[in-house]
Amino acid sequence: MMKENELKAYTQLMKIRFMEDPGVLFQIKDLERAGLQFEGQIQAFMEENAVNVLDGGKGLLIGYSTNALPEDKLIPVMQRSSRKLMEVVTEAELQILQDRAVKQVEIIHQNWHTAYFDGDVYHLLIAATDKSLKGTGAFRALITPIIEMCELKKMPMVLETFNPDNVPLYEHFGFQLKESHSSDEMNLTCYCMMRS
Image (cartoon, rainbow, N blue to C red):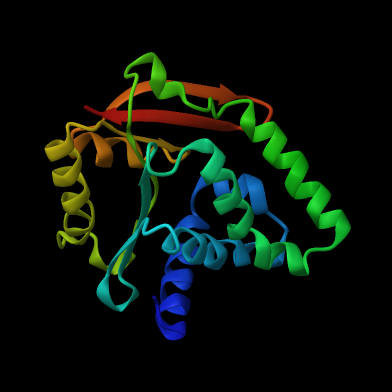
């Protein structure tokens, strides 16, 4: 279990790093309390042993095997991850979040990876390292144990990102861009990547 001060450090890391992400910005722009979602995500996925960290709040990875956390188990985890946020948002803010989520689903094709592989995959949901560690191997240290585990199990890894700058980073680690889905209305593109 993560200590309170550690949780705060990793939550702060996510706030800093994901406030630059086009998908997150679309979801929570102008909603000050929406950052509470990050703390809830860490807590909910920790209960599922789906969180890996670099010490000192320097890096965080959330991901899971789709067999270990199938959709019927994933939905309650996602609901728990939103609990803190739901306690404080107003009805109007909740409606805005729901409307944006519905729009975003238009370009996030759930289970897109089944067109390429029918079986258990590791879904990399979140990966973030402290910006000051760029070029130090911190991201490599965070992702390599997961890559090695997936290679051992012959399990592909999949991810979706809205940040075009992430595409070459993941390609460097063996991921391939399989699909992209765009919306001019939202000014967003979802990049779907897989590492076989």
